[in-house]
Length: 309
Image 1 (tube, rainbow, N blue to C red):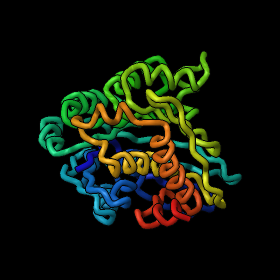
Image 2 (cartoon, rainbow, N blue to C red):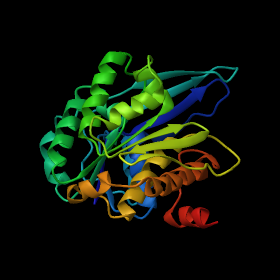
Image 3 (cartoon, rainbow, N blue to C red):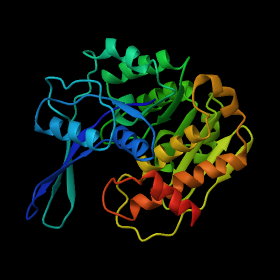
Image 4 (cartoon, rainbow, N blue to C red):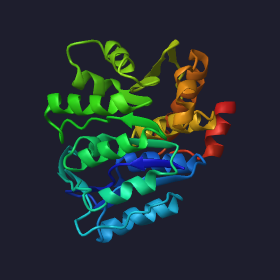
């Protein structure tokens, strides 16, 4: 069993001349859906309300075969609203609820059978829930592989010193870390992003991977550095690309039976050739996602077809 801990929210688009629309979002939730579509049993541990938006969340998880063991709570489901003006420019407003106190005592039981725990984004930064997530990861680490993606949101978490300190807490616990070049540039503006990635590898992870927008992803392990080619596709939009990359990265690790704390040393001994193959799978999944609208990660069959072509 794989577990994703983190936020889910509803992305709402409104504005002049625009028909209001809403869809389920949130980086960790997208990763959970991506893992399920790639054929892995996965559960999502996060919060949402008993409102209509919460019903959308529960339905989306069920439709994608993601287990959802935690019940809704009495607080509103979190939202991210984009207000479009007549020129199409967007102004964003966030209504975020990230308090996990009511479910904190349930988390250890839900993590017992997990060989891999993934978390990141707002869930690991926004208090008070971030502290609960950190405690859960600390509890799970003796038995599970830990994966982390900071997926920084500077408009929500504005204090970069706090964000840097918080990110490093999770990096030190993680076996696999993925960050974008924009994440590293914001967290460490005074040094090259490659140096920041190397510094994170030195904090304990077996693998540190950096995505670079439309450029090739770059990964580090004890054996050295690897990269992967990005398949050429016609880009429709980039929504969910990083999350698809993350889910395929983790799926490729699990497919190689490198998950679970008992395999931690094997993961640390991974070679650059195997890391390159893992990065290729992740880059291909992201390319499939950007070739179609929205956060729509590929199935296992789709990914295998593209990798073999």
